[in-house]
Image 1 (cartoon, helix red, strand yellow):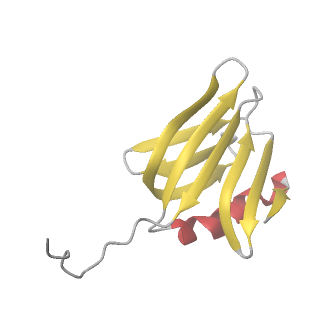
Image 2 (cartoon, rainbow, N blue to C red):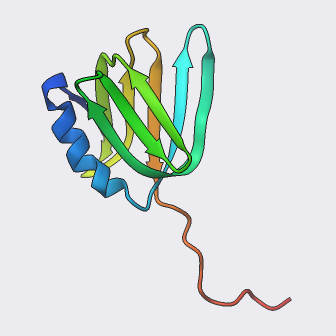
Length: 116
């Protein structure tokens, strides 16, 4: 595993390349701060996309039924396993850490269940 810090001037391009690769995956969003402690904002929900809007200076984690917005981000880091991005860590303008973890959705077997 390796951690790559993404420079601010590359955030838009990074997100534009990553977002289509997330189709069909699920994401969990954890928010951690001294005032709040650690909280799960979304638990293994289908992900629609991940983007950065430089005009409004925010990241958007688009999930099925929920948009998690990260305002005034300071840092973006990607945890990788080989070429795959396993998670993203974003620190917002207030120092809150937002961790977005990715996983493949569970695979369902097409074979009939075993007989009892």
